[in-house]
Image (cartoon, rainbow over all chains, first blue to last red; front, side, top):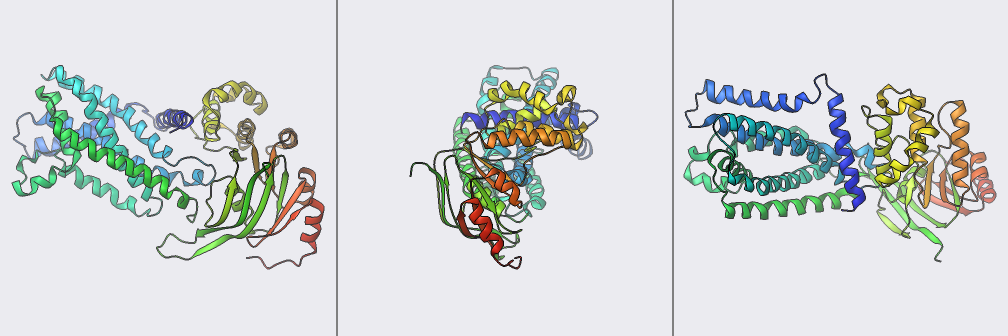
Length: 253
Length: 233
């Protein structure tokens, strides 16, 4: 992508975050409060009410949700981005890929704040930083590529089938439960586990937990598979947007 | 031939009438041919719904035609868009940068032109305030000042020749006329004969998505008015 578009993406991201801050009374605090409330909900249901007996359940849940919420917001925000910017796309010649990219970047900035908060919580509750933190960067980069690819695909199709916005949240909800975010997949029957393993989020969340909770290096072969899937999805998503862009301007207003 | 910068041959553009699958398409442009030569100031006339705006966006490269051929030399074609991409909660200054980036300027170019934008828009201290606090007139002043910073090879104008309240209208009109007559290639869509006569050195008449005639302004206007008024589509 040309340097000019990179400048546009960066500045639009700044604008997006800035505007978001101005739109509410508590502003930036919501970046922390919203995910914290979400985590508290799951904690209440699974740890307090259902009394999940799993060892280390709280850090298990926090790491899972932190990784998941980043992925989820990239898709729900990035997925709506092109559809939401159709009036602009009708007026000026820009690569449509810019719009979901801005949302993904904005969500990544917010994720970094939450990740730092997660670090502090883990360090204070007996999970100190360790050498395997070095592997965190590649793991997070892979998640970013995977999330971007998924967001591009959803974003590319949304203008043509806006009905998608009614189902996407439900799909994400199901996907969260199937990704071992709030409960361990150990309880899943052996016969189904093979299919679960195809989901890159499972491997990414697993790698994250290994690093942050057990000082365990990630399973590099699993991550290699995730890298292949992610890059393929990213390339497909970028291609799809480019391929469908001529149709966006011809849609009914 | 090297001076032809945009050439359309029998171009047609179809829109989807509805989002449903298999919904019929309607042809906003049926068959338009035009030739744009460097430095030309082309006026496009035609009745409502003739496809004038669609034509402009096709020339700009925003719309890809469904049939016919488009030749475009490696030049920048930009629609004169006011307040493009403006975000309510951002300051006038940030919006100027954002809009400028969308219009194809590099960031350092816009930053360099911020003083000129501030001066031309007469916004004073409001420049650093969120534009949600602006009046419509102020918004137009900012939008116009930003749009004038973009210097495309081909400037595409849809009706708008001046904006804002009375004083600013005079100022913005003068600035735009100066730009038009500075040797830029211009395509100008308008209803008004007088404006086309003032601004353009040639004209194109389109009717129901078809180009009827391209030539000198007076000849085309005469033929346009001599034709019986077609029923609107």
